Length: 123
Image (cartoon, rainbow, N blue to C red):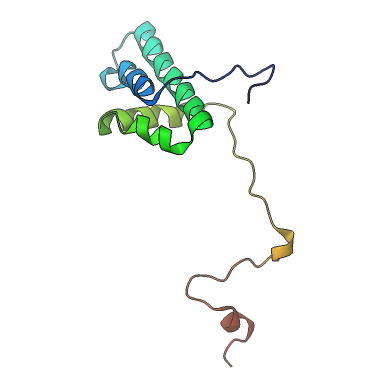
């Protein structure tokens, strides 16, 4: 949901989002790509990411997968790589995990261990 500071997400259908990803031409980026062209293509990819987020908010994860299955494996890798680097350079942080204080501090037993074996060690 948008507030006064955050603009609303772009509303596109899965095939339109895939078209934006393809149109960003990330596979054509090279070290010698002129800065203005690089910025234009990167901005197109960022717009695609915004539209993908809007799609997720409106129609859920299945709609996101519908969009992503329309691009090639190489396009998806290029898009994911760029988005990961964009997130790394942003102020984005995940909220810390919620701790259930009623569950206790020890948490669940390790795989293969039973609670009885932890409570009463052999001896």
